[in-house]
Amino acid sequence: DTGVSQDPRHKITKRGQNVTFRCDPISEHNRLYWYRQTLGQGPEFLTYFQNEAQLEKSRLLSDRFSAERPKGSFSTLEIQRTEQGDSAMYLCASRSAGGNTEAFFGQGTRLTVV
Amino acid sequence: GQQVMQIPQYQHVQEGEDFTTYCNSSTTLSNIQWYKQRPGGHPVFLIQLVKSGEVKKQKRLTFQFGEAKKNSSLHITATQTTDVGTYFCAPAQYGNKLVFGAGTILRVKS
View (spheres, rainbow over the protein chains, first blue to last red):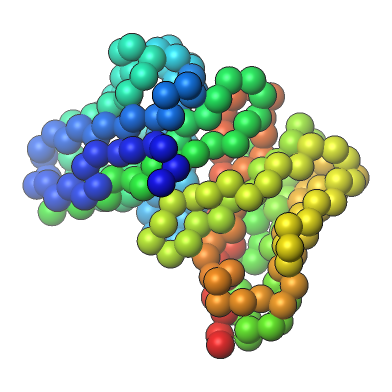
């Protein structure tokens, strides 16, 4: 257990439905990251927060994806109008402030769009 | 953004053989991290390299950072079945974004 928790662990949804995932980072970590990973690939950067501010969002991310971190603690990632291509593992990571510190990953949420 | 190439994409070795994965960048890196992901698991931090020419060891694992800080390698001596997984490099950009290479998948035959 890394201290980063994600919920749910698995989600099966029908195409066109909206889904929301939650990430609870390690409490003292002010930086939070979302990644998407498909089989045989490395984690693909989606977005990044420092405290409650969303500082960067991948240009690969369509407008159907949105993320929030309202109080600088937990974060949510929402995918609207899901498509089959959205099926992947969604990973959350957090790390402490100051430089290039170690990132701690959650177990991920596996999304299957049918 | 920062782009790195990891080679090989995949390697299947006999238990006891050595293994090396390389991470190459077209630009100079401030530092680089390495992570391991076991099958079905999540990435776990292994090490960070900061200095030009730096070499760090963790038991059978040896990590190197090139003199020009454009490449890095991870070498495993005498692989064991517990080494199975995917090894990712994560080059640091100036700032906070953390991106990963495509990874090298290691399989070990016992």
